[in-house]
Length: 202
Image (cartoon, rainbow, N blue to C red; front, side):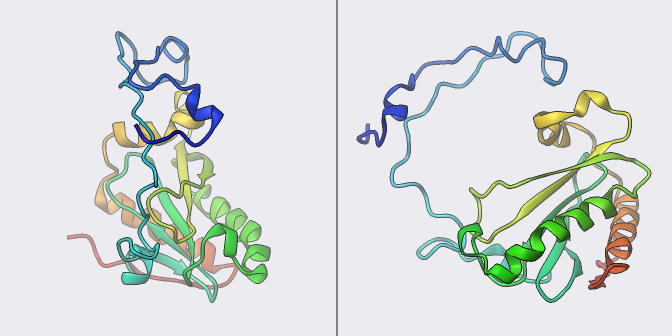
């Protein structure tokens, strides 16, 4: 095993299966029965390079800057993705390549307002009860914020397990996805920027 970098790491039970007892029976946990947690793997050090980091794969966003974009202004763009079980799944990104730690002040100053606008636009969809947003940054170093729309009335889908339910639920039909995209993009464009029309569904 690689030399462990901290006391926290030295306290972890590598190779052991942790108990799922704390999750099973929780009303927001989507699984039941005899679940087995995979053994805790050893840390990978140095960590694998993310897309966009020097020496890693090319940045997905910078390689195909217009792909999946449904709205944009001078600083930001919003991408929406098909083949998801939630009413709407999107990613907000700066148009230029930045990480969170080196976002220029002018971008940082507008981030909160853009998040508010995106959340409000998604919440206009009749299928949506609430819009959640999260930041996971392990796949690409290009800063991005995920938006996940919880279906109206589906209280079982609340909380951190919403992303798992997105994988479990049947995909939203393509025509319905396209309509949701049009509505969200138009709502965002009301406050500035421009809606971008996606290619028609095949």
